[in-house]
Image (cartoon, rainbow, N blue to C red):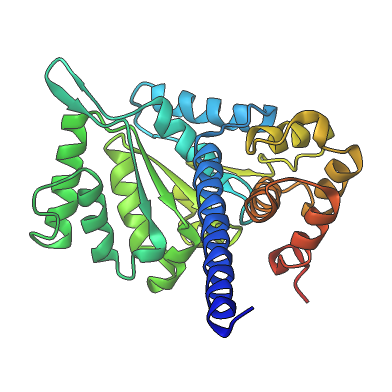
Length: 292
């Protein structure tokens, strides 16, 4: 073989390798996109989650009362709190009814709210107010409550509510919640156990909330976990081994988000849920290891 021919063959081999790598990358990219979409749309009709969803439905449909009541959802991270909220908002979307905009619920992320003044801005922005930063905090809260009545607002989800503790231990935020509840807007705080510590500063307000601890139960039923593995991927049910399903349950502690993370990451990387690949991916997931 001549030097020129050798160089040409080498160039072709490099180009073929690069093409193969690009193709593999595109396949993983498409698989990730499809799996992500399935996960975002999936709802697990498991009894504890259905029960909590029904509790939200009941609160929203309750007729106005002098002393409004609501629920605070407390659960460890990755346990499905956001899935509950998303499911409720999916079932009750914004819509136009008799020519009038209706907004049954909104969500505000408290982790982005560093001052109580930011909360009134975030609430107005969630209702798509034209100028959410206009006016003082008190004026903005007044405008929010008026706008909320116009659009039929029922529930306000305050996600990551434990972060409110960073705002003067949460006391100013509790005043805003009381103002909303007094105007018949039910607030649904969501977060970890520290959420209850914030509410402990206002004994009167805390009695208006049912603190839903332990309502999002771990998934221990192997058939449910196996159905998740099928629903979130293109893997045939016959290709999923019983020992793999049991392994997923043991390694994730039955925490819904951990289960989905392990399934998603393994499938995106390998294109299957073979036991060895699930084990290999688990070894990379430090979030599943107990904290020291």
